[in-house]
Image (cartoon, rainbow, N blue to C red; front, side, top):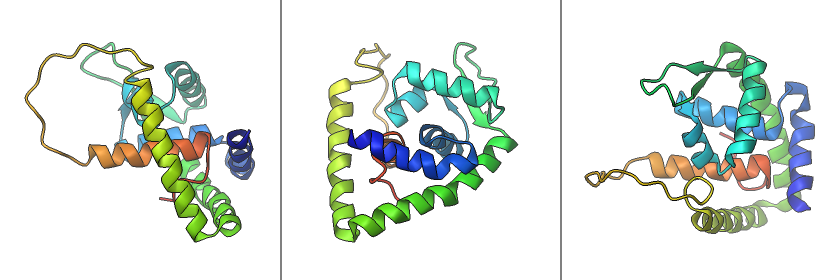
Length: 174
């Protein structure tokens, strides 16, 4: 019930841009990554593949994103078009207005508490769900990787996704 109300708040504010908050989150993630494939978006945004595929189809139909050639032809990579970049830029200030409204109503301390708790809840949900809707994928063994910025970027995108698609109170405007 709360997630629907918060989603509606953000959808209403974003309406002039022509984007829904879930689409805004997808476009923002693709913009941050430069280009992204379905698996990267699914994992980063914690969105199930069916919902993500439907949203990507609509964005592609509206020429907001386009497919990008990938060495592995089975991988569907996407990037923003110039129309997509303009739509995202038009939507960012609108998203900021919704964010400001939430901050005014909650106050800074309550905002930080809500953000912390929702981020923790998201980590629990994603951990429980596991990779790609709970299926364990067999991966070839690789040498351990050095720590990179991918983890913090993923956490930021996931938090924004939860904000965007469900609980608009945990991400700050970027």
